[in-house]
Image (tube, rainbow, N blue to C red; front, side):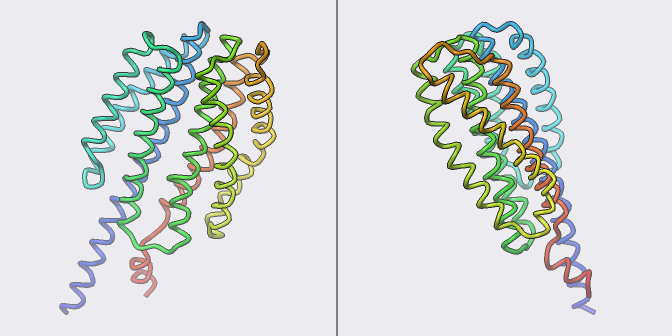
Length: 287
């Protein structure tokens, strides 16, 4: 009788952990959506500082969305207190307030750096939260490969694209490349190619079930011609040393299409992680 009671107690604990994990992964998804909007805000504010009135109007809409999402994130985090870092979260909130309240007084490159620091804080927070959530259950190596792919590899690639979008958009508004932007863009283009190769290689380690995200993967792969086009614009127009002919809107739109395709891949991966069950619970259920 004692063993049966202990067995049920263990199962109850596994179930509780599974429920907390699902809430934490839902929070991760919401945090990634916040990153997505902050990345857009970075590009829009960069272009607004460069003098584009269209992007100036976008900044207000995006800022309202970021603020609204922070309120919703606070609600979700209240359900995940065992796996969140309150001090780290407070640092993120303070970083956003700094960006939000002072960007109009900043230089373009300073605004870019402050936004990028905020995105890094958010991505670090997501990675730690996601790993804590995954540690709540026992899984195999293929599940762990999917977790790393979703929480680390794809977000890093997206952020490189986001930084290129921000610098490229503001540079196109100005019409000429300055030294600070040129240095960062050249570095980013070199790193982007390496990260793209890494993302493709990591995908090969995923299980067959994880490869069910192929619909999104195919969409992302279909973006390769767009990525090649963006690379061509950056290397042969923005970094050409001549007067820039590509419009800011074209760079922003093209970059966003590529970024959105990769966010779809990431969201599909998160959906699969959410469906996973602790191996011990699976064994109990299948007895």
